[in-house]
Length: 162
Image (cartoon, rainbow, N blue to C red):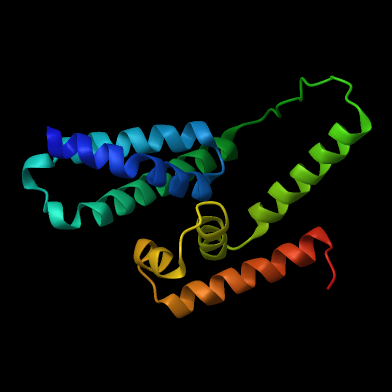
């Protein structure tokens, strides 16, 4: 029990961020992390604790993939579109900030998944390339390439010229 609690305390925030970068929705990320720890708890007697971090990330990644496969099926059969309920008027600055935030999120969403994951782990979580390489189970060179691609695509999408 103590080992599991320590694992949760140590890994839950990073795992939630990892899943959030995959899905872009905080509630879904929290749900997937909870489900991941439930699965680990259920298998706690047969787990190799020396490699449990990798198991956590693999399980969370698989759960996220399954979630999106399910969402695609639901979307395929849905007929209605959700209407926006926000009609709040805001000052110019807030509007510009919201527009930029939307553009930023859109650009992030257009990044290839491997580049987006590496980019956000580096820029938001301040993870070093070596840490990212271990999490994603790729080489440091692959992480460098993914982040380089992400930066170039983000600059092009946002319209930033050097």
